[in-house]
Length: 373
Image 1 (cartoon, rainbow, N blue to C red):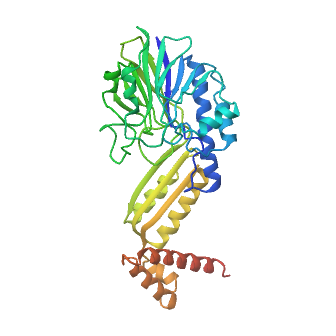
Image 2 (image 1 turned 45 degrees about the vertical axis):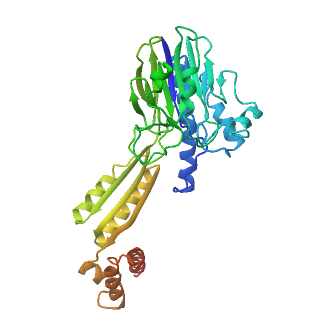
Image 3 (image 1 turned 180 degrees about the horizontal axis):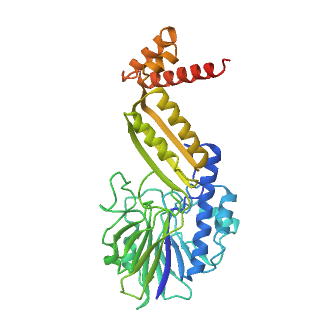
């Protein structure tokens, strides 16, 4: 029995520019924590090896400190690690991998093949056929070499690659770095461990994407896990289990608000947001000024609890009712401006500016009223 952990797309050094600085720093830190949890899981389960299918680093320009920290995070598992370069950290002549070697931080139990070939895992009946990327994008199938790579009879053959299975991934996935859908059969593989798609995805019984172990985008693609892979022997079908290791849950809400009850329901839902959530909310429709204020308050409370919250209100219009206009000074100049801005919210060329201006006007008038005796 060969027992493996399959993981990929750690993206160490990833930046989160859409978030506040503090939130971005903690999201980046979570990627190191996920690696440490993988190492602890590997030790706990006593696996024969951990396979990392590319994009260990998010960029070639990651700092030396981050390189050292990454390899330090592997410490809990002293067994074999086999990791390859992906498109973000391709094995160029001068790369993050060459710097890692120069820094001397790659331990003797960590195998980093920089060219296609076979890694015979010490102490296990396992041959890893590795296909690291040597450039960011190629339109040749780097796994084609697996068909010709020989291994000892009876040895379990596991492929390790980074790219896109032709015709099997969702739309809009980059077509570079293609991998033949029947590579397992062609190369007589017992299992093909893949990286590049950031969600956990089964292509067939022997071909899997592990996905990124720490979610990093607003897409429901089953990220946040590693794969526990058990291979009874050469030729036997693997038993694969997805094991959650991620900390933060990234979710997106798309809400259309038309009635006061819609805004109330959303505010109630926001009250349930927890500390490990990274949430993006996209709002459209229209609401009254009172509903807008209540919704802002609910979002502010949720943002204080959540790891991060992004609120997109670009398509949400304010619709002041008679009470709102009266509070704004409906019979005077301010009320006239508010009515004009309300109308301009429906003009495609001026909607965004009008919405922003009306919100500023509401905020100014409320702050002014609050400051009066």
